[in-house]
Image 1 (tube, rainbow, N blue to C red):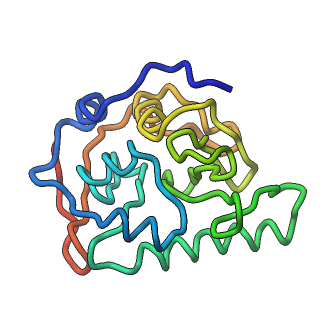
Image 2: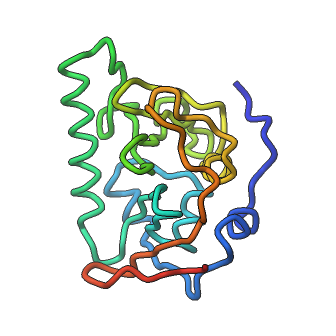
Length: 193
């Protein structure tokens, strides 16, 4: 399926989030990709380099590795390991492989404990063309073909319904204040209001 949704720029995302944070967020993307064993979508890396790991409106968390914090990889391994356990207990309801398994889903965001968003690394060789799959405790929902920033913008605008399997609608109309973690051990800092 081809992505026919209009492109979303960093300016579009920044407008939804109330502006840009004061300084860029340094990420060693080459090191991250080497450790993961896969490339990552360019728009996700652009977002992560601007915002870093953030929680938006108290409900949408975008996972971005912190410069000095190995916890990103430990958290990723733990969360994806939980999915593998669920799959092993009920393969029919959980039909996906999970990174680092070949072609496995790779977690990139969570929403308020309701929905986890994964890239489907098996959906093609180019990370910029990976589709997103939403997982909840009640099932899996492949999303229409969209880039990472298109998914973010659609969620923030309340245009993407990933809640049919979650028991309540996602709060797409909430205040989109950004909370950004600067580095391991640092306090979370309020970004743009």
